[in-house]
Length: 492
Image (cartoon, rainbow, N blue to C red; front, side, top):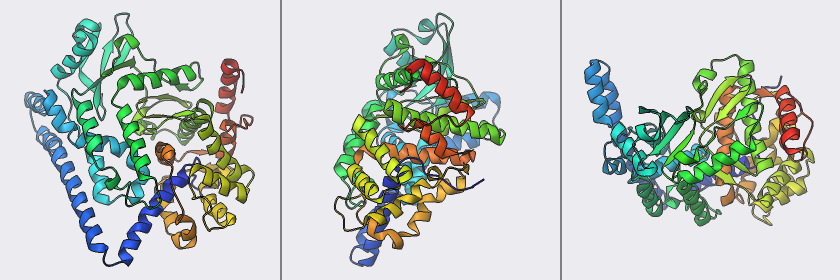
């Protein structure tokens, strides 16, 4: 069995090229002594500001946890109540006013992880993990405003204790009047206005997306980031996305998407069927055969959605999956969904086919130019571009069983950057189109998920089933999926 890493999807190339551009700019500054003080000071100030923000927002939660250790049950309840956000003003202070925006940016920024300054990465991680919960009264107030009645009047049962916390809201258990178990996501009051204001005013380009990336269309990238992040604030968009995925995968043998209940959903409240199952950290302890099936199911979900339905969920986070064994997976959270045009999907597969199936250097070069990964008419040879791209297709290029390792997932970018002197001529003309900003996240995020599972499969054969060429099933999950597809969609 070959044990090597795999970068899945053509857009990964763009992400690594971006990182290379960032590193190239840093080297250029280092080569010019006149630039070093200004750049160093700017980064130091930005790092210090973001790190200080993370410490401030996380300090209350950390102190709360420490105090709770030796407290009595009564005292713990008192401490919990003191931590809770009880007014819209508190929410705006805690989750808006830059923090809310940074939390959302952090969700998308993982594809730049290798190029981010360490203090920024640590700060973003804390900002996402240390959100205090709403009080029961405040959550009930939002439900009443949105659904026209108090939770215990709208639902047959309502659990005031949140089941889970998200970046801009929290989830409560409930029971519908007809007895269905529900998950009700309630948005923090006022956070939408706070985050929208932050996104309008925050210097995203200066946050590592503009002047540090030579050759990139920074204004278009920033516009794409703002649009995607803003969409997550409107639960009606998320509800529409989730309904679409639920319809696409209805009756699927091993992929499940909870149904949305429209009568209990608004722009700030999203109600779905309650899904139960093993969380990611629990599933990681399962036998390797089960982890392989789970990884294959997630892979199939991502690329069937991309190639067949021209959309994909852009948040491959461990918390967004529930596992049921035998490769059965429930997918959650559809706030960050990217919809692609027919042409964008065709261009993506054009690069895949040229690189993996036809192995045609001329066509690879043209495909890279078409999607904006390489500048048109750059003074580099076709063979150089093809050689550069091969690193991204190692597992799907070969018809053999491959294990995706965590080590590879965390080091693939660094491994390539170490060879910058070898491919500096290609990197000098690299770019990343705005349409691929979110696609970078799903590709690298998926790689990280599969690496944690050490998922093993013949990824070339699995991928070929999902590509437009529609290869025959290569696994038991593939045979189950093909039967479902032919039954529900009549083949291609």
